[in-house]
Image (tube, rainbow, N blue to C red; front, side, top):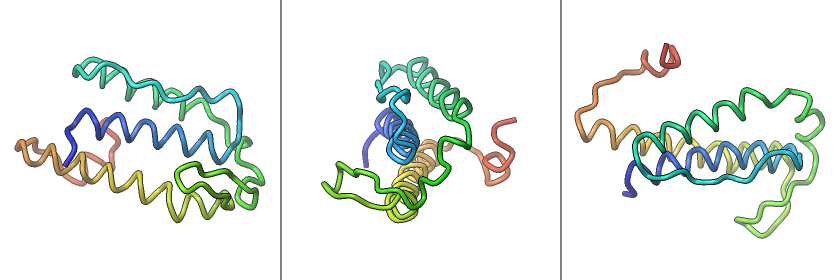
Length: 119
């Protein structure tokens, strides 16, 4: 199992890639990993959240049936198929692995902590 820093960096990259690939918007900056320190990881998460918060719904209009290039597969998929068959499964896998790493270190948080969004 890859370490915490890998899981956080990968989650951020996957989230950005979902937006960039499906929206095909050139203004989405490429993912840039931050230093592996706790502060660097926090900054990386905050930068990703700010990006996701800044993306308007209109960026995705009509993209569900649009062809998108998926470099990981070296092929083209429809936007919705990419999200459903690859993007979200990949995101959930790494989020679950991150959760497992926290639980392994006896960090106590429950489903409610996730559902209320850290508030």
